Amino acid sequence: MRWGRRGATAAAAPPLPRTAVELRDVTHAYGERTVLAGVSLTLTEARIGVIGANGSGKSTFARLLNGLVVPTAGTVLVDGLDTRTQVREVRRRVGFVFQDPDAQIVHPTVAEDVAFGLTNQGVPADEIARRVDEVLVQYGLDGHRDHPAHLLSGGQKQLLAIAGVLVMEPQRVVFDEPTTLLDLGNTRRVARVVDGLEQDVVVVTHHLDLLAAFDRVLVFEDGRVAADGTPAETVPWYVARCG
Ligand SMILES: Nc1ncnc2c1ncn2[C@@H]1O[C@H](COP(=O)(O)OP(=O)(O)OP(=O)(O)O)[C@@H](O)[C@H]1O
Ligand SMILES: [Mg+2]
Image (cartoon, rainbow, N blue to C red; front, side, top):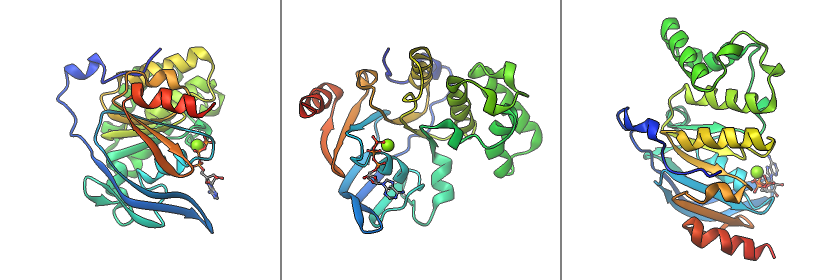
């Protein structure tokens, strides 16, 4: 069970344009409390993992990447677009999948939920119908298209949340602990989906074994990047730090 590089499905389609995310001396505080400090990074790799202890700043970092959180100081640029001032364009490039799919699922039926973002973007109705159908088939949810979204199982909800992001065709997808609430079977299923994505990804996770084939792993510690390298370099270092 590993999340690797882009899957074989990418071979047939033209490659997606790559998205580079740059953080320049980023600090973030919630009120008086600084939870990220002095983070400068350029993210270009296809598969980037983010690990670290609870409260080390991973989710805050992940949310900075598509403007869900804007930095208190410093700048986050997505292909040169500033998340502080160009958030709409940024979110077209970078999608975000929450840990808890209930936070992301807002519409009564499965198909309506997936269509939501496209409707918001003013995509024509026939194109919405086509793209929604495509993505539901892709994630094994076509048999549920008119079912109430809240009655899906945990794993199906997570797949629905992923489908709702991917239907928007972002170039990079940020996942904040996509498997934490799932059982082993659904963890594997979601892992396979992530593995097969043509899109570049950033995955925050406590499931370290899933990152073995990633290009790069960032280790957060007390709001800073304490290690940055290949999984072979960073994961054992992090495990040793955990004692
Ligand atoms: N909305 C918020 N308001 C105030 N403090 C927050 C908020 N969100 C996070 N924090 C604080 O910021 C710090 C970093 O939180 P963050 O959620 O980024 O950590 P994390 O590494 O994702 O942790 P976990 O592994 O538990 O998900 C924590 O101390 C947390 O309490
Ligand atoms: Mg978190």
